[in-house]
Amino acid sequence: MLLNRILKARSLFTTCMLLLWSIGTQQLHAATVKDVRLWRAPDHTRVVLDLSAPVSHKVITLANPNRIVIDIDDSSLQANTQSVDLQNSPVRRIRTGIKDKNDLRVVLDINSQVKPRSFLLKANQQYGDRLVIDLYDKEKQANKVIKHVNDQDRRDIVIAIDAGHGGEDPGASGPNRLREKHVVLAIAKELNYLLKQTKGYKPVMIRTGDYYVGLQKRRELARKAQADLMVSIHADAFRDHRAHGASVYALSRKGASSAMAKVLADDANDSDLVGGVSLGDKDDVLAGVLADLSMSASLDASLQVGGDVVRHMGKIARLHSKRVEQANFSVLRSPDVPSILVETGFISNPGEAKKLATKEYQRKMARAIFNGISNHFSQSPPPDTYLAWQKRNRETVVEYTIARGDTLSGIAQRYEVSVASILKQNDLSSSMIRVGQKIIIPST
Ligand SMILES: [Zn+2]
Image (cartoon, rainbow, N blue to C red; front, side):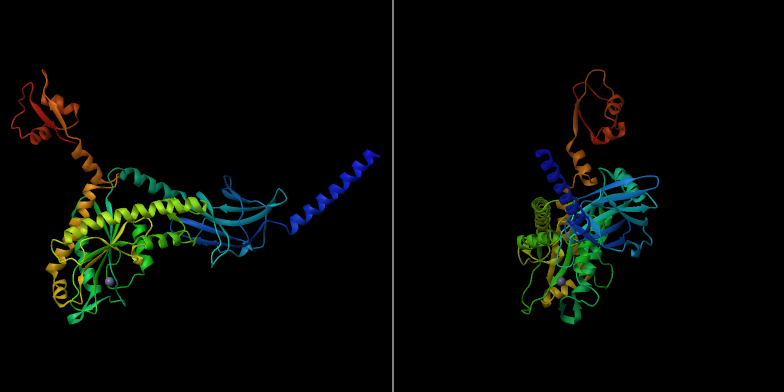
């Protein structure tokens, strides 16, 4: 009787489970994939799965034949994967299937070797939840790494030079139809020239002619160039023509936090990277901390270099403010590229406009900005740069006391320097040395 009951109960239980299971497979998936989109970028392919809700997933790379397998827990497919345009991408075909009865498996058949990276993006105004799979081209990655190794410890400091306005946007206007866009481009070109002349620097011009570049695009170009600093060059205008003086701006704290908010807004373009760290797959608190760290590091660096620039500008121009001012300028809102905006003077002030229009003053202004930048970076160079290497060498001068039996050639060999360089360093005219004599071993 009892056994019977148990059996009955069990069969009822089984029936219930079967019922639940069948509902589960048909309707009760946690999420559906509603669309599949694909873009080809110069170095990677982005595949986006539009989801009805967040999912947990796994990406597996398999060879022979090459394929990327994406297993999405408790999900079903409602998208037509056959209509996705795969042209110019390494994806040859998209296949889908059901795995373990309840999970969705998406298989990307791949032509060439790729390195996948995946992350979830939360819903925003424009899109719902998304699963992003970036397929990085392997050959290009390898090239990048080799280049990095070669350049290691000796890379140039990259300065993005942004001449404000341009094209249909003339910026401020002064007497004699003087236009800000022309003045600032001329100063930018001079600064570019000075940096090019200096070992250890690589300038990158954000615009090189009279055309407009969007503000976000300017930031993107600076980031793409992996700039250590972006300098945006402007000239002020004010309705009161007496207003005068040069100034340097960094982003305000408020601007920084709004920029950070934007990074965290999970916009597919902007949420990508902060300080080289992907935010997409981090939870909100951690992502916030990372963005905040990166942003305040950038802001600190901006304020420092801005201080050096304004100090040097003060030597050739009247200053509007001796301190670095802070404002919420869009072009300064890079979370990971220190950025300053230089107002070279008031183009609306007849006296300053007259100066700003001359080649001589433009050169002086560029030289002052250059001196500020170079002052800053020779004191605090990023660790992997030529300037840092140079600084380390400067700081590691060895003083050597000659001992019995020493020869200059022997010492030179020991320290891996040439005899000639020791002679030169110590102002010696011959290689005669005496015991107890102190000499400086030059750095390599
Ligand atoms: Zn301007």
